[in-house]
Image (cartoon, rainbow, N blue to C red; front, side, top):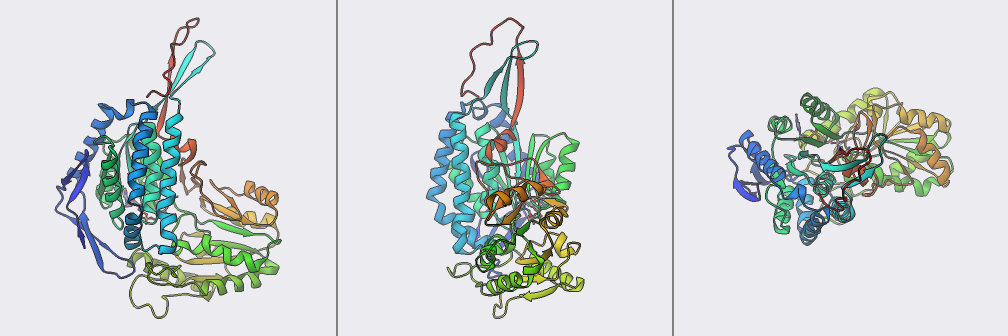
Length: 490
Ligand code: NAD
């Protein structure tokens, strides 16, 4: 069992001032695997002061972006060298099967860092504008100190979606990792330290809700970048708004996969397993509603259920496992409650519907498929965050789009068809921040985020960098020339 007593603040590992600790459990064995400090408000004060100093006194925000890019590349090297170790840690603390862990949890995070290091290497911080009255220089200045708050499901990837653009922009950060999965955050701190990130540019703490709120409302923080549930996101938005802090929110989802009538169900249904059941359904873009033409509904449900019932559930270190545990007993019980809610609403369990047979420890739920689901049922409206998929029939594609849009969320969606143009037309009609034809892809170079209750703002792509920059306009008198531009200068 790892016992960690220090927190990473101002480029040093300092003993936490908190006398409280957090015990991390392996969700697949239920055994304790680590103990880390539960940061106190005093630890938050020290971390924010370090981030503030690193921002206000520099050199990070005033370095040329191309110079920052070099440090980001060094971080990429350090993290890549630790890729096996961080993968193992994440399999232990999150329970992601080894089959998926390296790509989903680590390689994707490295790609985001690589993308923003490349963007920083060539970014311009100043652009001239003719202006209507006088010439103007529009600068992109870093927004300041950032509080990054991440959940447990894809922790390093979600952290990198904040850290990489923040570093490119010249911001400094206090990262608050999830209580369930702090170990990857400590490894990130170690890599940042070795990469030569100046002290205070990244500080890492783990804390529960009360201390996290203290971080959000800390006057030394300029921006909050939050990923998590919609309920907590609304609370964070309210707290940030009271101080007019900048905020980015990546929240929950209830995405719909629309299966069109031209696909071969024998191949399409097994392919849908990946976008519905990966990570045991614990990902915000999970296609937890599957919409199928009414006249092919029985066949689609049967084929999908047959494939789902064949998925190996169990030890995440076993290369044959596809379904690992849920993160905690509480999450497991919540998912089991939803399965009962579904039954109570009149939906029918085709496969799964409880804990898997023959697995006597770990927080597992068998892959569960519901049929006879109507769009208004709670299992069709609320985010379950487990391996539970609701099949809903539709008449024509207008009705399918209407059902997909009948949601408080608007994070992601997908359409499955042999006709890409028809798929893109459907995509245009569904109100979400991201959408995929025949798959589920998040690209570091394209913006990702949600509309409605799924969030505010975008991460990734140039848009994700813009979220860490404040435009500043400098005008000079009409008739004068703008001085030389600070190309690639902060
Ligand atoms: P959560 O909202 O409970 O916690 C998220 C983070 O917020 C954790 O670090 C937690 O410690 C912290 N937190 C909790 N209460 C807080 C408070 N009052 N003030 C400040 N911080 C607080 O979410 P979770 O259960 O850890 O994660 C699952 C949720 O995350 C799901 O709803 C999922 O859809 C969402 N999610 C969204 C995305 C996305 O990009 N849109 C990605 C992954 C997960």
